[in-house]
Structures are given as C-alpha cells and as structure tokens.
Length: 135
Length: 165
Image (tube, rainbow over all chains, first blue to last red; front, side):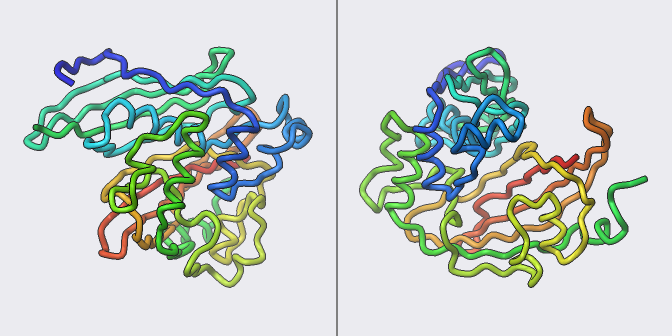
C-alpha cells in the first residue's frame, strides 16, 4: 500500500444472505434465535420475515477490513451501529479512508465503514482504525 | 421520571459475569472462519496448519460451553430474551421496558487469539443514557466486556450497546 489518501476506498465484501449464511453462523456462535431462523417469527416481531444476526454483519465488517490490510497488519479498533434488520438478500460492506497518521510503528489509518442492503439502505454504519506496520 | 432507579445507578461498574473459555481448538477457529466467509474460502491464516492458525478478531470462544461461568445466583433464572436481563444478572430490578435491540458494538483489540489459548472474559455494567424515541422513553445501556488470555495479555475490550423502549 503506497499512497493512503482520505477518500480512497478499501474495496467491498459482498454476500448473498439468507438461511444458508445465518444457519452456519448460528452453528458456530450458538445463536439459534427464532427471528433468525423462521420467517413467521420474524413477521411476529414486526418485520417482513426472518433476518440475520447483527453479529454476522460485525464479522463481515471485519472480513472487509482484513482483506484490505492483509494478514500481517492489525485492526486496532472497530465499531458499528445496527440500524436496520438484514433481511434476505445481498449485503455489501464497504469502506473508505478518513484519516492517516504516521507513527514510528507505521501508519494508523482511520476508516469509515458501512453495510448496505439490496435496497440501498445502510444496515450497519461503522468505523475502524488499523495499523499498517512499517517495513 | 427517570427510567434509571437509584439501585440501577449504583450498579454501574459492577461485575455481571466472569467467564473462562475452554482451550481454543484448531477446529473452533476453522469452523468459525468457514461460517463467516461462506460460501467463499476463508483466508489461509484461519485454516492453516495448527501452529500457524490465528483466530479472527471477532471469534467467540464462549459460544457453546465454558470452562467456568461465574454469575450472580439470580442470573440462572433469567431468560436471554428478558429486556431486564442486564440488571437481573446483578440481582436488581430493571426498568421494566418491553422491547430491546442490539444497538451496536465497539471493540479495541490487543493480542490475537490462537489455538491453545484460554480466554477470560469479565463483563461489567457501563453507563446509562436516556432519550425520547419514536416509541417513547428509551434507555441506552452499555456493557463492557474485557478479555485476557492465559498470559494475562489484553485480547480485546468490547462495549455493547443495548437499546430498550
């Protein structure tokens, strides 16, 4: 990564979400909650059907950032808000640089993140700070 | 009238739970990575040979069972879906609101988790904030979960926001 400029994008992490992704996540996180597994339970909660776990969107944001920095650099901080339910369909996680600070250890880069659903609505805005080590 | 009773206010900073994970296995890490990257293959560092494995930062070693789980005696009777669960885990009454939502999370990371690590989590009640929302009075509460490994190194601190109304 040679030039780091505020506004520069960091790529995307895209997944088609639904029971195939949610059930796999439930299996590793022991998160078998009816609203994530049953359309009727989702409708009873006031939504159009079942919806995905916020924690899985949290993982997607980490996947996005990790794929940009690579295996040798570090995520220092990451945050997100859960604004809307992730109903079945495409989720697109993306981000851009908002700041760069050079330090003796390397460049600390601040990022603005978001997860957007198929309708274009932001389901999970967030931020991250990463350290891109020297050398 | 405030949703935060004097007892709730006094509970801020109290320990809600202390959990100790089982030793993290290679299979735990690989299965987690496969699930969160599915249907594509995870990066090699999450499925590599055992010695090279590192866990994704958001990996949860407490998901299915724990080696130790110290909670208030009142906590075992509290449903996961009870909006007052946060306070009841401390043995105090909650605000009695009907609905709750996961508002978001903030994590600060330290040492990575690797195969063989044993993680200790200490969860404390953080501050309360009150707001007027679309559905009436809203209570926002924070829990602070600090993880360390078997060497006492900081792994992460996660602040989770619970919205109740």
